[in-house]
Length: 346
Image (cartoon, rainbow, N blue to C red; front, side, top):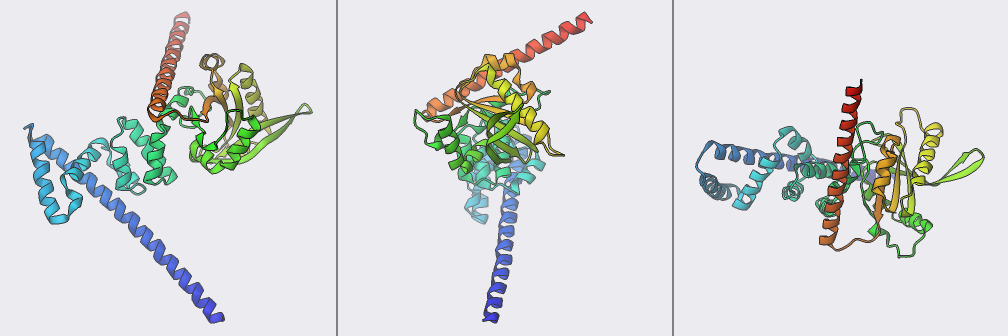
C-alpha cells in the first residue's frame, strides 16, 4: 500500500515536470515563431524601400510567397506574408516586440494589426500581456473600447494629480450585472459582489477587493464607504463610492473625507496615498472641472448597466472621447494663459 502511494506521488511529480517543460517549450516556440515573422516582415520592407519601382513591392511578395510556401509550407502564403509586412511596419521597436512575443501569440498580434491607432495597439498588447489574456478576451477588450474609455478618464488627470494615468475608465460597463430598471444602491453593491471576478476584470489588472461598507468613525459618528479596493501595482487603497443618480458637488466632499480617514488610519508603510472613484449613473462634467477633483485624487466616472447596439455604442464612446479631449485642451489653454499672465505680472 505504502509503495503504491509513493509510486503515485512520484508519477504525479514527474508528470508535473513534463507538463511544465512542455509549457515552456510551447512558449519558447511561440516566441521564436513570432520574432521570425517580424524579422521576415522587416527584411522584406527594407528590400521594398531600397527599390524605387512602385510595382516592385507587389511582385516580390507574390514571388517570394510562392517560393517560401513550396519549401516551408502554408505559413508563408501571400496573405500571411503581407501580415508579416504589416506587423513589422506597425511594431518597429525590436525590444518591444521581443518582450511582447514572450507573452503574446501570433494570433494576438493579428488581432492588434487592424487597429488604427498605434497607442491603442500598444495599450491592448500590454493589457493582454499583463493580464495573460487569450485572443478571445483580447477581442472582447477591444470591442468594449477599453482604450478609449481609459483615455476619457485620463483627461481628468493632470501631471500634479495623485491619480496616475491609466488607473480608471469612463464609463464603466456593468451590463453583466443583470440589474433591472428599478434597482437600489444595495442591489448594485450586491450584484457587484456576486459578479466580483467580472467586476474586477472590467476595472483592470491589479485591483483586489478589500471590504464592502467600510465603517469609519469620525467625531463619534458612523460613516460607510461603499467599496474599498487595494491596487497591488499602484500600491494604494482605492475608495469607490456608488451613486444611483447624477453627480452632485457634495459627493466630492464625502469622498475627500473618506480618503483623508483612510490615509490616516488604514494606509500602511510603503503604500501611496489612497485615491477615490465616484461612480454615477450620470456625470456632470462642468462641475468636475470647477471642483478640480483631480487635485484631491478623485476621479468621476459614469457606469452603464445596459449597452446600446454596437454601432450606437461606438458612436457614443467616440463622442465622449472627443468632448473629453476638448475639455482637456481648454483646461490646458487656460492654465497656460494664467501662467503667462503671472510671469508678466512678476
